[in-house]
Image: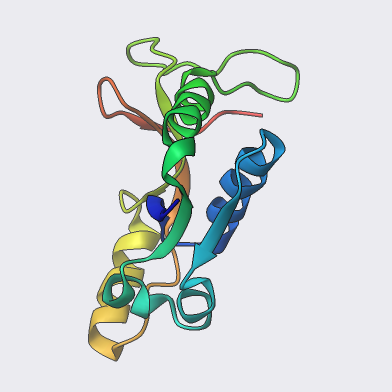
Length: 138
């Protein structure tokens, strides 16, 4: 009964969300290297990110849960399915950090010149079919 790394994350919020979901389904799991990445996000690549570890015998059950989560479409507050405005696909990624705005480019240049972590990136949806980045109008 050994632990295996099931998934890695670059932030603790996403790691905890999946951990809670797996635990609600009866899968025991643990987070490794969460504190070092939370204290200094630049160390994420150095330590390999935040690692979600599970027992080997729970692997197929955990994969089925993640597959079910990935196939569930995103919805708005009024329960309408969010689709890509370009190709109408519902296979989208939420929380994508876009660098396609003027503020993001200026932030990247400033962070390069001043040796600081980039502070501005616009969070949008990204279509996994056509690569289109979009925001949902409220």
